[in-house]
Length: 123
Image (cartoon, rainbow, N blue to C red; front, side, top):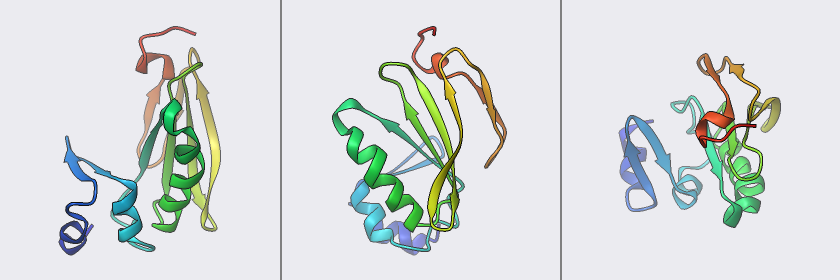
């Protein structure tokens, strides 16, 4: 991401924590299409209070920014992680891991995980 974009986004739900860029919905809408080249992936943690926005609206915004990899992390009920990849302007789910079933995601980097480990629950 270019420094100018960071300045333009300041004050619009932008935070940098532990080397991970955290961008709020308003900032992403200002960021706009075609500026996701510096972002390797986005991981969205879905909360029960924002489930419709997290599942329907935010992925469209991330796709418009051309962020190539999107992970949707759902920790309520049965924890799961959906690994999605950008294809022709929309995300396609390639893999879904459910708590108790360890799996491996290879893009944008290799990681092995079990969603149950994220909540200290077992399947």
